Image 1 (tube, rainbow, N blue to C red):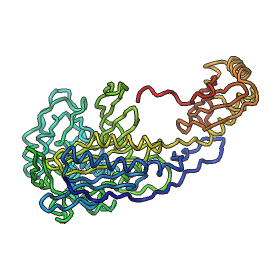
Image 2 (cartoon, helix red, strand yellow):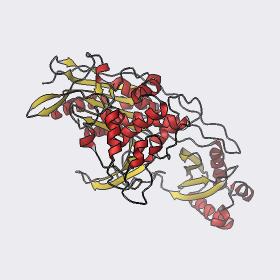
Image 3 (cartoon, rainbow, N blue to C red):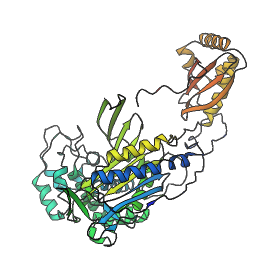
Length: 529
């Protein structure tokens, strides 16, 4: 049996709800930031932590993971953390929250941040040819005469056309700068033309690290330490295993012939920007919290080390990867569609419409980070088993969080003008008034359907629904300028939906009123799980 350390539950969190602005005749510069509305949200989510702890212990036993650390991040803070097993088998030293694991390809998001910092400072453009900063690339033999030059954007999104290189890339961390220069001069074969397909390339991210060094005038490791890790307070995070205090370093193992075999610690080198980082669960939680803090877009202080807009840019699809639809073991339809941003993967499922993630695997280690920008929640896991397969167990953990009822997306906030138009349209449905209708109608509204026909249709629906109509229930807001609501009348309910036009002031370009069953939801029925 593996020795087990304590499981820790940390941090009670407090949310400050956003307050919607007052009504105004003109559209504001921005709506109030979207927010979570359930006051029991944190307590509900915490209800899943014991089951997640059990899940992780079972996974460690089943998968022969010597040691692991994992955490749940809520609203930028480490809300729950657990440790299991040993960081070193020979000494039986337990894993704790300060234990440092190699995180392999999760390093790519750090490299992307460094590139975007330089972009935001005006020192490069993502659409610059990469050979401008790495001259050795000028000698590449492209696969077709009409191939575009490889850009920094191609490298960030794995669309440079280089072949997928995970087995080979794992063994390149020790390559020196001089050796990499010779490799570049020798050429790189292409599997596809640049800019046409997704093909995961560790080599591409090593080149991005070279760009960071050449543009900044600093070695990549020093630049990242000074400009990324330091400002975030990630003191345990490094690219060199020898820099980790021995009492904190996780040793890596593989399971072979019913026994653990220790893997050598790989040194830092020219390929470090693709997979050389080591970190602790505490530091990695800071990183995921930093990424979650990019959402939602909002006014106010925008502290670095990378502005929120650039962090959101990283977390959106730059290169589409593909989609699958299948039935699971229960017969339910399962959707999986996604792509790659900048150093991060993006995925959409029936359960979660927007998931950001990256895994990492090297000899001796496996890790994952996943977060849900719309929900303000993430999960991280670190293990010292070669290619620890975290995807299934962390996916199940997110399902457990969802099952608590506390994993609900932010409620979008209406612009003040949308609140005003809702009140005006409610009065119009209750009792039609031409002057009021004319004052809120965008120029297309009567062209799409004449005023007389709209009035007649709405009045017919209201007569059938009965009098004493009033708004009831929440204002279901899709975004700052679109929403729906229920009007409860004596005999039946009505569903009213509006979308405002891109004008100042914003007037109603779309108006729909329809009968709604007493128990019928405003939201459409989901098409899959």
